[in-house]
Image (tube, rainbow, N blue to C red; front, side):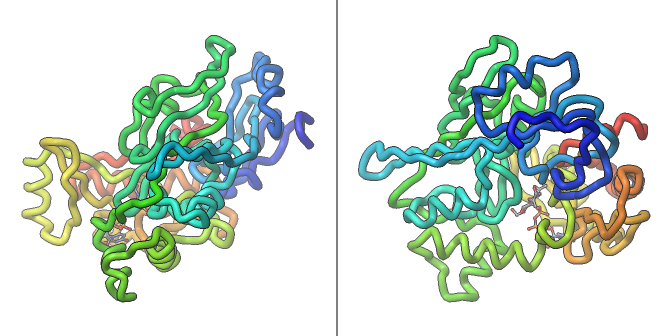
Length: 343
Ligand code: EPU
């Protein structure tokens, strides 16, 4: 299948939300050497990993390149640190398991995040108090501007909460080929996230000394709260948690004492979008086949036969409700392809 271009290909199997949409052209990339040739087209190009953070609201009138570059390697730096390099087409959770099998600390809190390795730096994946930025060393990219392969240090990637230069000012410029992580042989668990700590305490592991113990607790919490994309089509959180200035956050917390909040950058506070949506009674509500997940209000699912316009209508109604009740403008978390067609 490699390098064979399919015409008017269905994108449904390539996105975990499984919306009906097509790409004018679709090709699977298994060898980085084929990349320059595949990028040499007049058509718009979209690089796709596991499709767990991309929603095809409409058809894509260009060439979709599905990244399936494989390989994981490691290099010991000193008594504590190991560099692990993983190709962009590796499954993220398989990489987490690979590191856990070797007793390495660093990405245990990121267990079970759907998607492929190449998407991790795009949106600086994060969960349970850890973000990729905590242990990312560098990213190897193909730079479409120069036609060269380069290794960008993590500090050059513009990582922030669910954000990077790859999805912002440099969207479409770089193709991620691999990521390199700096992991620890003797790490300390990150247990600041209340639901993770509670889960560990419940199992008598308040001070875990093995990253596998932490990952197992993360997986139990995720299984309880989040849909398994292999069973229920979804793209995880549909909106980002909003970050607002402290004074406005305090004003909202005074009015809604239950609203979960976390200190963010100096002077700002992150608020729980899931709680706000839940508070407005959205859990379990649907527009067509698009539904707010019954166990977590931040997650939209495809309950069967959802279309891009169902998703957009539901998302717009939720957004308007939150704006009216809380004065906050929610931003989508996944990349929405073709949504301009519906505005
Ligand atoms: N909450 C409700 N009702 C709901 C959902 C949540 O009251 O329907 C409350 C929870 O009780 C909790 C708070 O909101 O007090 C936060 O909920 P949760 O711990 O599930 O985390 P979240 O802020 O909703 C974020 C990430 C998730 C990540 C979790 C754990 C974003 C956009 N989402 O969700 O990431 O797994 O924290 O770290 O930051 C994703 O990005 O796709 C994703 C699933």
